[in-house]
Image (cartoon, rainbow over all chains, first blue to last red; front, top):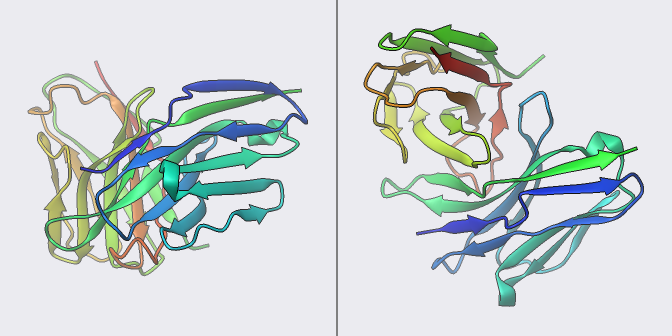
Length: 117
Length: 115
């Protein structure tokens, strides 16, 4: 079965520090998709990125960057120059095919990031 | 505005009572999902629906029931058979169940507390 491990339960940083959130996954699929979601205190999950297993290029979007390394089954997320508004729970997820042929997401337990002013 | 609404935000029920959580979307999405979130835990899939009048059990369906009579609505009933119903419940939708190409959009959630 698929599995996603986010070993960091909570991280606390001071504003403007860089922070990396780790995500390690397990899958027997040769083709798979990885996701990151942000859950602010309001509770609603916000989609951040989707990455397929064929594309190992790192991606940068503003202060956010993602490092996908197939060799270590990791998909880490870095926030550069963190801000208080980045405080949230961040979830890494992996797509999985169901027996019925549809897809579902397998989520890690999340990393709670607190950015202090 | 297009989006997903869940009501109410907070819900309190006595033990042994069934309770129904509402989820409505106006995104014209075919697929809808219900997740449960417990403190320090990731999201776990309860039920999902690929299309109207169809739904499938997820990983933790016991003690829950759903219906999908309309495309825009996917209510979740937490029955008295659910042994530990206190949790945060999130509804989501996507254009289809092909999540590798279609992202899931989430509602604001309902926090259910059973007293």
